[in-house]
Image (cartoon, rainbow, N blue to C red; front, side):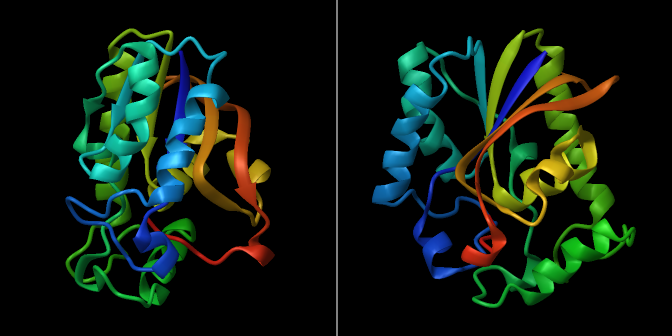
Length: 205
């Protein structure tokens, strides 16, 4: 199947650099709503049969214009939610959060923020959500998720993603198009919506 992975539109938490990972999360801001509307045209050539979102409201708001244009009702999968910031929720300091993700990348799978999740727990629930999408039998489906979760999952599960992203930043409404299956793995087809790291600050969630 082809899977289109989309980061949600911009929120006030993004512009304020707040760790916003818990339910229900911030709404889209004005630019975020414009970014959501732009997905209708950006994805016009994709024969999307279903749209999946996390249980955080910003993904549902991002998916709404695209869903309306296609006559689809987004399906909520809580497993697509952002990586938990635990005790650092709503903090302005993302240092421990970023350090935890770097530890995961280095193989420290038990690393976690106090009150947060470790690497195994994250991948178990995110892989399960993707498996549910694949099991539904769609040829093309879209999911709207979150910055850190998409980067972590795709870096591990999508062949070609890490090289294509490099040191860049996945923008709000950045889009990854991948092809494959949970059993056979995923191959990156395209990556749209990234900014060179030297001109972008880290924006979790």
